[in-house]
Amino acid sequence: MRAANAAGDRLLALAAAGHVLDFDDTYGPGLAHLSAPTAPAALVVGADEGRTIGAVVDAYAAGFEAMAALARASHPVLYERGWHPTAVTGTVGAATAAARLLGLDADATTVARRLAVLGSGGLQGAFGTDGKSLQVAMAATQGVRAARLAAAGATATARIERAFETVYGGCWANADSTLAIEDNWIKAFPCCLQTHSSIEAADRVRNEGTDLEGKGVVTVHPRSRQAAPLDDVTSGLEGKFSIPYTVAYTLLHGPPGLADFNDVNEPARRLAERIEVRTDDKLEESEAVLDWPSGGQATVRVEAALGSPRHPMTQEQLSAKVHALAGSRLDGALDDPDRPAADVLALVAR
Image 1 (cartoon, rainbow, N blue to C red):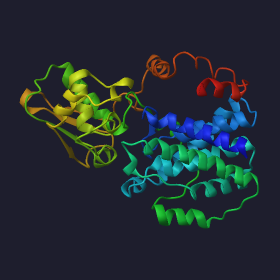
Image 2 (tube, rainbow, N blue to C red):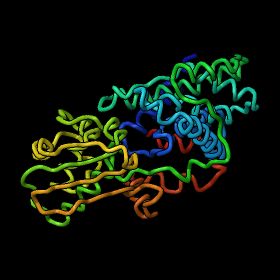
Image 3 (cartoon, one colour):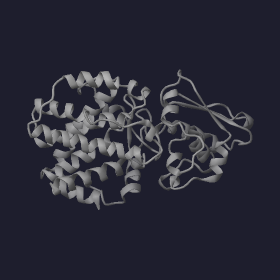
Image 4 (cartoon, rainbow, N blue to C red):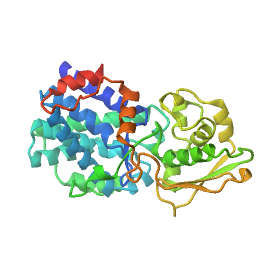
């Protein structure tokens, strides 16, 4: 029991760490962070079961696509009801990844997914607090627990799938021929994805030397405003979920990096008071339009910021992101598919 608890605590810590900076990925069609719960679940279970890193990557891919299918089928209803889709659907992604590594057959994997969703939760009210990353971590641990229960013979019927649809408002779905990886967004900035196009628009305004007297207006899709609803921020963590603050910071200093949310930047906070956020449901969900009329600046419109499927980062930019987060210790970590997963876990967890 102590060993099981230790593995659960390790998974909780890794999954929280993977999401706490809001510097992971986002699947636009489901507005969910697919890697945050599934990758740590696959790695921890793979290490515990003595599997190779190749087996872990295969399991991660299965969990990634299973989570994407449920998030995609349930969007935008989950978001409209105030749920955090990553925490809700992440249980199913983690369960699927764990089931693959535990050698469960199709029927037992279905049971694992059903058991997993019994522990789903997560609210948008946690955004801007430690609760956001913790509820994703709890989703990962719930999914792994469900897979182990299914492996031990627990049962669950399709009534759970119908109940999910009734209670959450989503649609139950399994992975199909749609490949979510092709529509996945890798974040270029360590903050809420729904601020990214606004940040890029602000960077263009900054580079053109616009006079920042008067007031600015940022127009976004209502979903972006729902995801990043904070205005007068009191902490760096809150700043990650504020469109006016991230725009103001970028106008003054350039796009924010890893250390730029450690504290509130007071000049940016004061400038944010002069930035109005409006919504327009005719825009795309991750689109932003920035106007600064007093500076004579033409309207700046960004449909998809850096990191999106339409504007992907280069291999050099991706490598730079990994090095910013982990230094060089993960270089080549996935190159040998026969490498024990426990070796890679030791590198990640140190």
